[in-house]
Image (cartoon, rainbow, N blue to C red; front, side, top):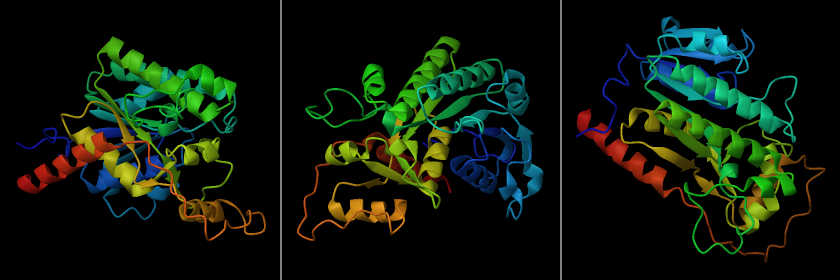
Length: 307
C-alpha cells in the first residue's frame, strides 16, 4: 500500500510556504508548483518573492501574500484554504543578526504561526523547519555513548553559557512549537537541517558558531538545498511521518572537506594556511539521519509502485 497521503499531490490541493522569500522557502515553492500544488507564498515584505518571474509552472497556481510572523491576522489570511503549511523562519529585516534576543523573536513567531494553524480548519499537516543545532549541543556531547539522533535536544543553559544563539533560538522555538502542536492537536513534523549550502554562504552564518567543536565531535553536517526541500515534501506527503527528522547529506569529518569548506567561506586573502598534506585524520561520525533515510527509501519505493 502506498504511503503517500491520499490526495496530497492532487492538483486541487493548496499549501502555504512561509517565509517563501528565503532560499529554502523559494525552493519549496518551485517544487510544490512542479508537483501540481496550488501555493500560497507568504513573505514578510510583499513583493519580496522576485523569483516568481520565469517560473516554468502555471502562475495561476501561485498566490503571493504579505505575512508577518508577528502579525497573527496576516498569517491566518495566508493560510485560508490551505491543507498544509511549510514553515521556515526568516529573521526580520531590522534584526537579522542572531544574538541573545533572537530566541524571543523566533519563539514568538513560532507560537503565532502554530496558533494560526490551530484556528484554520483546513490545515491537516505542518512541516516545521528546525536545525541540527537544536540537537547537538550539551555538556556530555564528547562522552556520549551513542550517536546523536532525533531524540536528542540541545541544552538551553549550555547554549546560553557558550553564547550559541542560533542553537538557543532553534531549540526554544522548536520546543515551543511542539508544546503548542500537542496542546492544540496539530499534526506536525520537523525537519532539523544541517548547514544549508547556498551560493551566498559566508563565515558569518550563525550556524557556524562552534564549527571547530562540531567538526572534532563528528557532528558537523551540511545539506544541499534540493535535498532538504525534497525532504520537506516527502514528510508532508507520507501519512506515516512523525516527530523529528535530522536532515543532512554530507558530514565534514576530514581535513580535506574542512579545507574545501573554509575556502568557500573565506576570501583567499583571509583564509588560513592549508593543513599539512599528512593530516589524514578522520573524525568518527557521531550523528545519524537513519530515520529520514529509511522513510525516503520506503516513500520512493511506494511512489514507483503507484506510478
